Image (cartoon, rainbow, N blue to C red; front, side):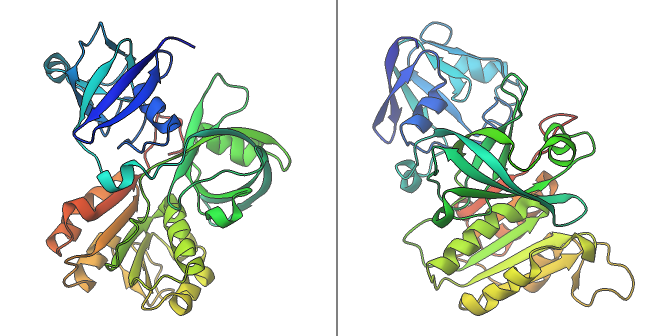
Length: 351
């Protein structure tokens, strides 16, 4: 480990200790501080912040990052990416994007070893993976969060997946994972991983969580493996007998791409006012009498005023990006739209 330095975040007045060998974002996670973040790899700019005290290149240095996330002119002005930044002296940093209600609700990051308990296909390209925690025997997290799973036999290669389970089963973690033909984790999941195999993981991460203390209506929009964190939210709501009204719009191409239908329909009985609305964009003739079209168009067509509501959107980037203006047009405040984009890290990745 390297020397340790004080990092103060403004305008919230929170201080943490950061080791030179860890990024400032990782230091915050280690101490249970939930800063805004996305890819954690210097690609997305979600953790972009401004250096108030300290000099880049001397007091803080950045690991390799994308200039799309941090253009050179912004770096010259004093902006940094916390997921790439290492503190080499005491610093004061201004947070640009933050949720003050969430900052102190974080669960300290843990490393764990888990054993594969279940691998099963739920559609042609979605797999249900259940891991039983071995060391430690449980992992604290908040519904809607994700962990990094490390590919065995590699030097730190990892992929991020959201839990579909809830903390009531904190000795087991359930995932819904989309497989890709050339995906590194996909190949492992379909060809190499066996019951009883062990995987290293680290987490939890993410801010795709219910804001406590709110009673506003919820509108959830998902597609593909974006179902996983929304399942976690709905399961948690049912376990806690929450009374917030919610609707879940889920988009798929064909009827065989739908999964967890019985459980999702059961929430209509367990959660007051809950509605589950699946839609197919490419239904086969005569096989479907439900909603059709892109899921964002279905939301636009069926919803009227969503003013005062909270929105949770999870799925492929095009779907998330299409949902944002639709939700805003129907009255959801931008600050109340919470989203996860399930992206593909590289040409041979899993999202």
